[in-house]
Image (cartoon, rainbow, N blue to C red; front, side):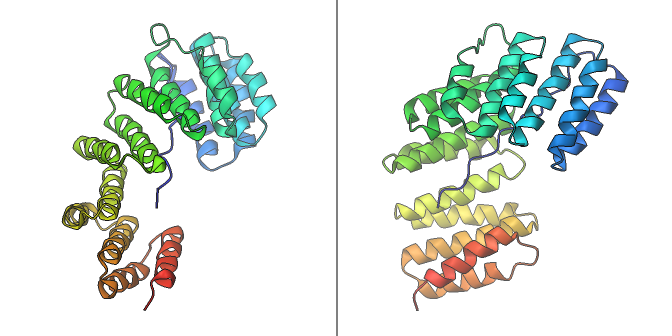
Length: 288
């Protein structure tokens, strides 16, 4: 099973030379964003933009307002807010991410035509390339999506950002069903980077499943042994590892070990409900 793409991060760094008061107020607005109160967040940031003393801060506040409005399913209103952003690269960037939130892929690609890696601020380039890669992936333009992901890698020093781009390449290679070798190469890059936030564990578990599907069981089990070392008592990854073991044993034809692994996964305290549902489905599909 192909896992969802890693989520793009749109909460960018603070504008340069931001005043302490603006920083504090911005943090209050981001708390609303993170709690899912999108309408309140949009109103908060519109008001913050009205008092922002610098164009960079005004642009940042209006961008946050536009994205919050887009998350509230008000795309036209969000685009109007983006038009009010005084700095043009930030305005175009906001439109790209509004279309990303709305899954309007053709419109996103049109907006992303404004990308200029030579003149745009560095903080905007990586997420714009990744948004474009997402859009092209959704439209089935896999070669173009890979090219954008590679451009994204070149424009970020963050290991997590680079890992997210490699993850997109790996998943696209699997979607085509024709290029397991490319997917394995992409996962190898993710693992080499050792990103944080679960990306390292994700790469190990997904590569193990891919290796198993290709009949490379020893290599798959080796990845899962490495995953065992990095679960760090996290119920999510403990459950994922056990479920992955079950997948590999099932592919090997060892139904007894597969069932045992799935049953252990189903009993992991604190495991996310979505994972436990997957485990139940696997147990139901596993014939006696």
